[in-house]
Structure formats: structure tokens, C-alpha cells
Image (cartoon, rainbow, N blue to C red; front, side, top):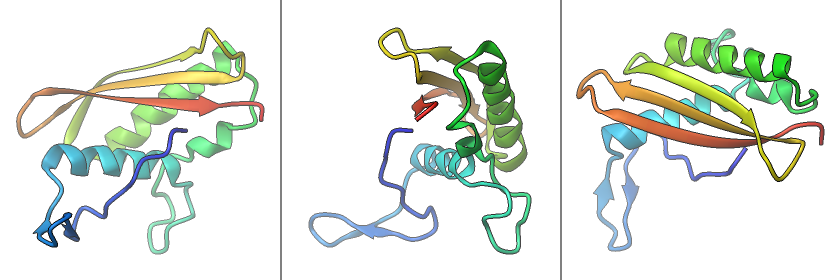
Length: 127
């Protein structure tokens, strides 16, 4: 998966001038989605079922069955753990340039604003 800097949504981070700022709703949701997908169930204390466990698929074959399971896992995990969004679609397809790479696109809407958003993820399989 591609690496992104994650900020805990509840703690402000200083900017280049030392001022504290909080992530926007859009940033907070996107960061939480990444955390959900990267966290394996049982990894977080006091919440044994939290997370999607997308890493469980890292050593699977790039097949139609694997891609459908990943799509279902993402849809179910986000619906369960990120209640500020409505997932419109999740698409998982193989990368044209690499047989072991998947492209993942998640289209969703923020419940508060109903504005469409997207998040793209690249995932390597069969490493």
C-alpha cells in the first residue's frame, strides 16, 4: 500500500510557523479509513474486532476471487468502523504494468455534507 503521513484526528499538529491546527473533516475521515484498512483485527487493545486486516491478502495470488474478497472486506470494514461516510463503490483491478499489483479505488460520500470523495490505494500481492 502507498505510504501517507497519518495524524491522529484528535491531536493538533504544529504547522511551519508553530501554530496548532486540527485536520479537516475530509482529512480526518481519509486518515481513519487508512487506519481501518491497515489494522488487523486483534491488533488494537480493548477493540479486538476493530480493523479490516487488508494485509492478510498481501501474499495471495492476484485472482478474481482475491480481488472480490478484498472489495468485500473494504466495503464491510468501512461500513462498520467509519460511520461518517457512505461507501458508494469499491473497485479493485489488476495493474496493467505489474501482475502482482492491485489498484483500489474507494468512492464515498461524507454524511455531513453529502459531497463525493475518493481514495486510491495501490497494493502489492505475492511479494
